[in-house]
Structure formats: C-alpha cells, structure tokens
Image (cartoon, rainbow, N blue to C red):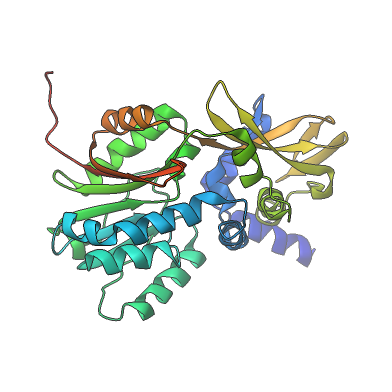
Length: 325
C-alpha cells in the first residue's frame, strides 16, 4: 500500500506537459514523442557525453568556429548586452561567447531545472563578476525574461543546431517568438547544421560506444520513473536513419518483439518492428537556412562556416519588419 502511494505521489508530480505529450504520442499513429523530453538530468548528462564523441562533429566544429570568430563577435555585439541562451550553457561553448563579448548579464533558459542550476552555478564561478539569472522554462512557450535585464540590448544564443530538431513551421514560430522576447534591434547567434553525406551524418547519431542509444532509451526510463510506466526498455532498440526527402536524421525506438505495457495505468500494445519516433535533426543548405531565418523575422548579417562547410554560425538582427518588397 505504502509503495503504491509513493508511486502515485511521484506520478502526480510529473510535468503535466510531459504526461500529455507521452500519452498522446503513444496513442498517435505513427507514434512520436517530442525530443525536448530527452533532457531530464540523466538525459542532459548523456548528451554532454555525446558531444565529446569522435563521431559527433557538430559540437567540436561549432566550438572551433566560436574560438576563431571570438574577436569579430566581440566587435559586432552591442556593449552592455544581456546574453539570453536558449538551453543550459555548455561548459565549453558558452564561456567562449561570454569571454568574446563581455556581456552585462547572462540568462540561461532550460527545461531541465537541475541541469540548469548546475550549469548556471558553474558559469557563475567561472565569471564571478557576471550577473547570472537562470530561468527554468520550456522556451517553446512564452518566456518572460528577468526584470533585471529590462532595457539592456539582447544577444540571443541558440547553439548546437537545436533549431534542426523542429519542423520548419515550428522553427519559424519559435524564431518569431524569440524575436518578440528579445525585441527590435536584438541580435541572435544561431548554430545550423549543413546537409552532408549520410556516411558522416548517421554515425553522429548512432555512435560505436552506444551513448546515443542510451540517450534515446533513457526517454523510456524517464517515462517509467515519472509516469508509473511498465515499458520493457530492453525490448527496444535505438535506430538512426537519414531521410533524404526531408533532409533530416531521424531517431526512433524500435520494438524488437510484441509487447504490452501501461503508462499511468493506461494500456498500450506494440508489435515487433513498430517504432516511437523520438527526434528529427534537419540539415540546411546556405539558402535554406537564410530563408528560414528571414521567415522567422531575423535578418542574417554575418555567417561563419568551417573548411568542410559542415556547420554554420549565423549572426542575425531583428531589423524593423517590412510590409513591402
């Protein structure tokens, strides 16, 4: 009885948006759960491991671009700007940006509270004179910025090609929302991954050590833990594939046998070979990236890419909107 009461209490504390997305996603055909729910504490830790894998080129490529462009970024950023990062600060990339532009404040926004507070504390120690105002929120919904940065010029920072996880219409809506939150005249530094050979892309999402597989499967562990699920995690395998028509990597969790399970008491069945679609990672050519940004209300003003043209950093500005050509 006590064990059941504890489990019921834990389930009642689950994020209601997480619960709704999981239940509706498992009922949908095809089944799909949004990638943002990867990032509980364990998921965030696993993703940090992924960024250090030899196959995972985006992080090291973007990091090197930040190192190379630091002086130019410092000259292009407004003095006294507040850096607003969409996602908890990377232990490597964020300090490079902060050192380059010497901001007046830093505002990290992330859905994973524990990871957010940890990264904010670490950056606070590394930059003792910098005011840090962490905001625990899902930035896919309206986010009020801290009043302490009101009136400061804003530089949004959206690294890691996270924009690629979204369908184009969703990405445009998010970019428009960022423009509204940051205000006219704000700038946005965004990472965008380029289209390239599947021989490079697929291993980046299906590494030899199995870290990405663990990251994907951890979503099921989270469902079992937070939503009183009975999903047999061992009955699923990680799948990563290149969808050329959609110009994206897809990640799925594939059932290796027929099964039945419950989530918060609701019954589900899956047959062998069925999948739960857990992530898209869209890749953009130069023109496609610029069209996406302009549709979101941002005017590209400077772009940097590596020698292989595998990854791009794009600096944009929220210029006055035009209603005529």
